[in-house]
Figure 1 (cartoon, rainbow, N blue to C red):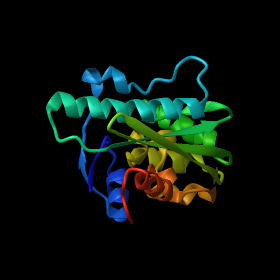
Figure 2 (cartoon, helix red, strand yellow):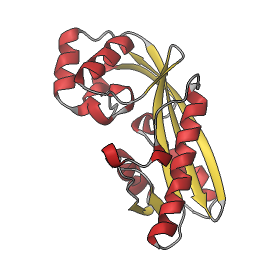
Figure 3 (cartoon, rainbow, N blue to C red):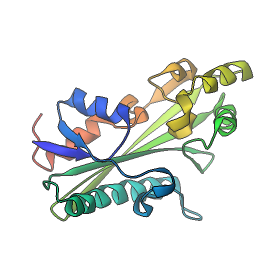
Length: 200
């Protein structure tokens, strides 16, 4: 069995491979030509749980539309989205280095939630699951933040950090799914795929 992964994330590709799932990558347009259907801008007053479900399911549904448009073989489309919730706010990917540093200063010495939604769409059916993890950072000083931001690692990641990279040094406590914080909760994704006929 084979699916399409609607994501550019190398972490998600690695985790699907780890699970033994065969896949092809389905790329959405980015930058100025980005597809409006997959816009990750939060709606006014939208809470983080609603936001991550809306964005994840939109990506999975739009993936099916792309298969039809490009006349590709119809197979399940798996999409995922990760966001942080801190003090009731949605924290996505940083806009630039200054934003990344500001986000990390806010998270320093605090606890935040990482929400990763996973959706699979196939044959007119869509199923969704949410993984929520709690992450506590130790106090991070300004020099560490500057050094980490200069590495470039925070720039394409929700919350301006990758737990599987250098930012693992900041994590004092984690409750939930480590792979969910990376961007694809392996346990929940496996259970979701079973509903579409996968056997592990």
